[in-house]
Image 1 (cartoon, rainbow, N blue to C red):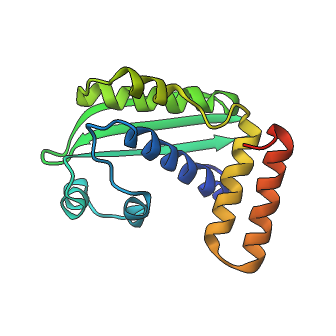
Image 2 (image 1 turned 30 degrees about the vertical axis):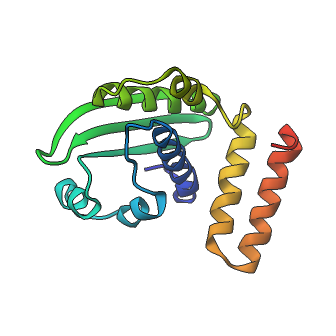
Length: 170
């Protein structure tokens, strides 16, 4: 829902991060990114999607990015009843993106009432990136590479290199 239609890479990246974070909680069964993304932009209702994926809960949300300003909304829905169990809005800057991602993950885990092990708590707090600009280059690079054309792959590699230039090998 960004004013810039070229920002899909960013929301897709946040979705992937959320899937990864939630997948680190052993008592949760989290559906793969490739399966989930088939419903992006779908007009199907949550109970239909949940039935197709055979899940009890669905997380839906939006990302709005304008310059360095960022807003993430997320909702956890009990699919059988199509009822919100939890919803929140997170507003900040691009520099806050990692804290916002962590907050969304923890809120979802708390809403489902999952007890985390100490190891899971540590893993949820671990970050792959500390630099928001390097993270943005990483997301842009992955998005380009997924397109699969020779030019897109070359462009994706350039984005990834820009990220490495900022943070070093990661």
